[in-house]
Length: 405
Image 1 (cartoon, rainbow, N blue to C red):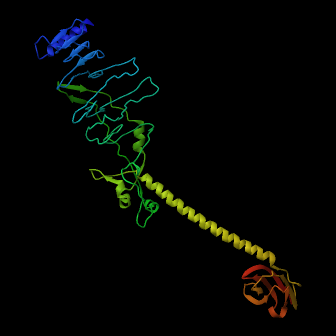
Image 2: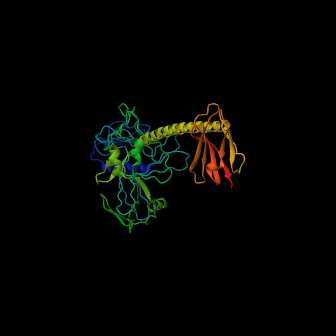
Image 3: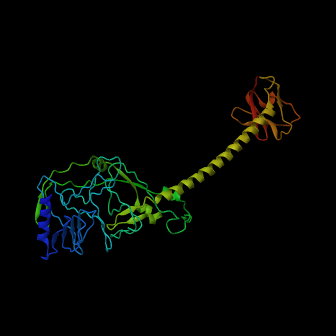
């Protein structure tokens, strides 16, 4: 411990721009005060008294706080700074706070690797039942103004975002009450939403597979010199391999823009993107329209069924009250009698005789007061004939009769 304190003290003396007595002082309580006349509350206090809750305190003023450079070998890991906090109800390995600036960034990560992987900020969790590798939230009083963010976001990403695994997300969009304007019904002139959506075209496409690096050699030109790193070419991700092999589906943006131009956005390179989130209300509207049409068709079908049933019942009733019997004698030569019975309200009733081609040979009007009619063989001639009882234009029954020689 004494060697560590001596080393820190020597470094502070070497970096001190002043040779005054206030450059470094080991106080009677064992704390070290550097470039300050105040009594150090922290074990090591630089340009201020610090706080007893902090082991090292440094007030850099208008300068940058700490600048660390590391240069590692080809096979090992290097850390510009490594911090560990443990055995507490809340333990922060690294805590960053930035305020009162034109652009405030609490923690910023930058990575440079032209021929291999580069990750600006990486996080992982171990030995825990719950948590998050990277967690972002906003609270009143801590609004950030880092360009190009406008508004508050738990996470903000400018560019494509990739998730490998299950995405558990609740996607929320604007409603008419939260958008600052009152909602109004959708009007598409003479076309319904459903018919407009039915005219859209679905397109298929393949994602272009990115070119993998042929070498892993990377050269970093740092402030103090060059660091050469050589490593293994990373294996392709199994999900990526499937993603680039599969066919993908999308809507034709040009066709959608003709009907719903507000759903289509144009990028700088001229390609178009679709706001699928705001298509959901249109899909709901189209479902409502189709449901209304289905209900109308159901009503029409029900009404048609009722009419059919009524006509069927009427026919059945008519057949039950109006009856036709077989002629006697049959076969016959000179004369036969055709018997029948009619309902009291039967109108426009007749016995019609047809030849086997369906041609009407004879029509004999009858009424409810009659029970039979006679037919002479000489009237029809030899052969087989059909005769029917017709009431109010409805055929009640049909039978056969034969005239012999």
